[in-house]
Length: 297
Image (cartoon, rainbow, N blue to C red):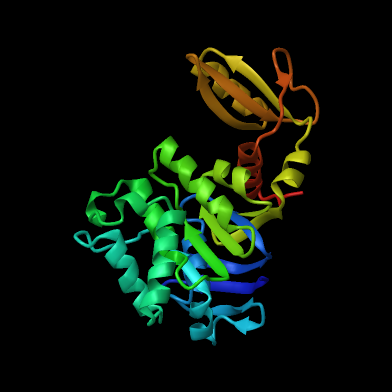
């Protein structure tokens, strides 16, 4: 279902400008929202989820005025916030039943069918009677998705869902998210670029409350084809010298040496070789262009 955000702005009482005239169009399927910490991602998610009002702007969700028809939005919304609290001594089974009742599922038979199906879908059936305090980080996130799916929502928002997860739990969680984006709108807000690369056909990069780039990952990568160069150097002094001469995107330690990744239309010099661009390259270049006062191409 289409979600259209127009000229959204929000300044908090402490003077922080979280959103600055932000506009986005989000269609059906998975949409990735990427940006550094403090970029305004959570502020945007809370506003879409009707948890806070903007100072100005409009949000339309398939004909529903999100800022005025909040109850209508909440009936079709599933939300997993960045900080998700649970009652630690309650089991996953009992907590889901409690939340289902709060969402208006008064029929015991319908509620049992829905809750059991969600526990199976999120691979929590075998631990359904265990206290939530005993769950690992990944299990808690999967429980968070289970509660977000109560009522079969048409719009799902997940805010920084894989932060702090180990690689195995992160992979399981991403597979679960992937299965959700086939017949509804799912907004994935994250600072982990790889999450978006794996899941989302459309994405936006935001920083300081503004949209810097809106594209498909494939188109963003194609724009950098033949323009990313790599070289291994041994010392910090060499790194600093290259940073003064070239547009260095990022540096990584590889076997005790520094891998320098550079953006250039042609070879930047001896020892550099062309490499396939990655979505992290897109991310860092987009942010650097903002710092240098440029708009993305």
